[in-house]
Each structure stands twice: as structure tokens, then as C-alpha cells.
Length: 168
Image 1 (cartoon, helix red, strand yellow):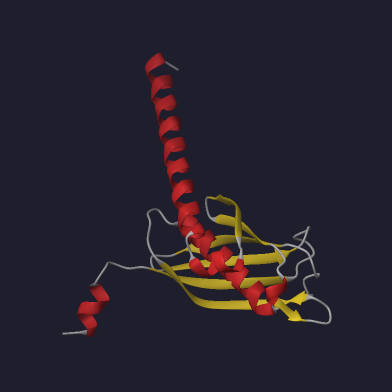
Image 2 (cartoon, rainbow, N blue to C red):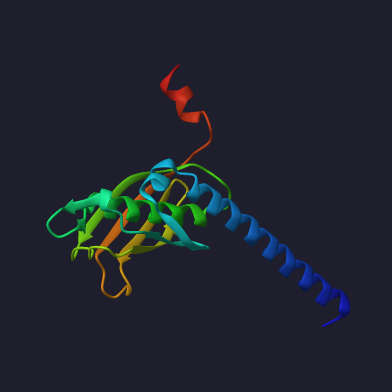
């Protein structure tokens, strides 16, 4: 390889790294600035290209069964929804708003009282207008899930296009 070719490859690698760092920063910024997620105490653990991992520290405010201290299923749903949305968001080539269209949750066992719940989600397909994600909520081991989710998320289309159609 000539020196010029290796310089070009090095420049390309540096540019890809800069773009990846920029995407990672805006992905974290977006996910951290959702008021509902912040109110529940969700923490973004890590984000990559098409995946996200978040955690929800145990909080007595969200207990669904006072006798056992188990978290309410709605809080687990919120975690899976947020993590799935973050995974879709990380798959987008540019910043665009997204919204949950459909979210199916399968509860497999209760979360243990007093323990943090972690969720990991992957966006496995992205079409022009819809992102598709799968997620799992667990304590220590993804192979022992508390709940799983499959969701679809609307990806914004051209600004104002629908508004003009709806209001002639």
C-alpha cells in the first residue's frame, strides 16, 4: 500500500471514529433528556449502533405488590419501551423524532425486590418509516429474563407533509 493510500485509510478511519463519537453523544443526549425516563430514574448504561442497554434502580415508589416489594409491571414496560426506542434511535442515519407504535410485553417472572433491573434492546430492522426492536429485561443474566418485548416505532417523515394533507 502506498503512503497516500495508507493516509487515506487513516483519514477515513478517523472520520468514521469522529462520526461514531458524535452519534454516540447525541444518542446519549436524546435518551437522557426524556422527562419520563428521568422521573423513573432510568440510567443509560451503554449505546451502540442499533442497540442500547439501560437500567432501572430499585425504587420503593414503583412497587406493585407491597407484600413482596416486587416492582409494578408498568415500570418494567416503561424500561423496555425506553430501551427499545433508544435502540431504534441509534439506528437512524440522522436525528429524527420517533414514537412507539406498538409494544408487546411477555412477563416471564417477577423482578426481585430491592434489585436493579437492566434492559437490553436491539433494532433489528429499519424501514423508511418504521423501526423494529426486540428487548429483554433481566437482573444479572439475559438468559433469565424478567420480561421480553417486541416493538415497532414510527420514524418521522418530512416535516409538515402530513399536516398539509390533513388541512387543505
